[in-house]
Image (cartoon, rainbow, N blue to C red):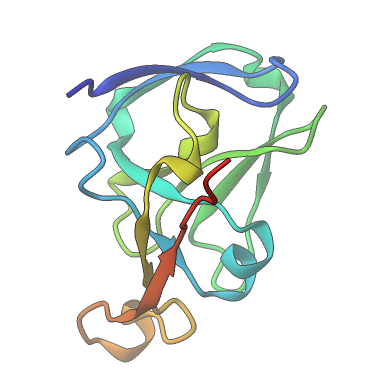
Length: 139
C-alpha cells in the first residue's frame, strides 16, 4: 500500500507531499460543527511528514472555539487541505480528496468520530458517533 502521496488543493496553488502514519487505516470523519460543514474524509500524518512544496503563502489558517486546532485552507480556491489536531497535536488530519489518485468515495465505510463531545473536554476516550457509507449505483 502506498503511504506517501503528492497532494494539492483544487486550483493547484497549494501543493504538498504527505506520508500517512498508517495508510488508510486512520480514515475518519468528525461530527463537530466545523467538520459537519466541510464534510471532509481525513487520514492521519505526523507533523514532520507533511511538506508544503508550493503555495505556503496561499494557505490560510482558521481556529475556532478553544483556538487549539489549526485548520488550513487554500486562500485561492477555499479547499481545506489539512489541520493540526486538537485531540493529538503531534498529528495532522489530511483531506483525502487532496491526495493524488484518491477520492473520499473510494471508501465504502468511514467511521465518524464524536467531535460534538470532544475527548479533551470530557477527559474520556474518543467515541464513535456512527458510520458514513457510500454505495455506488451500477451504471
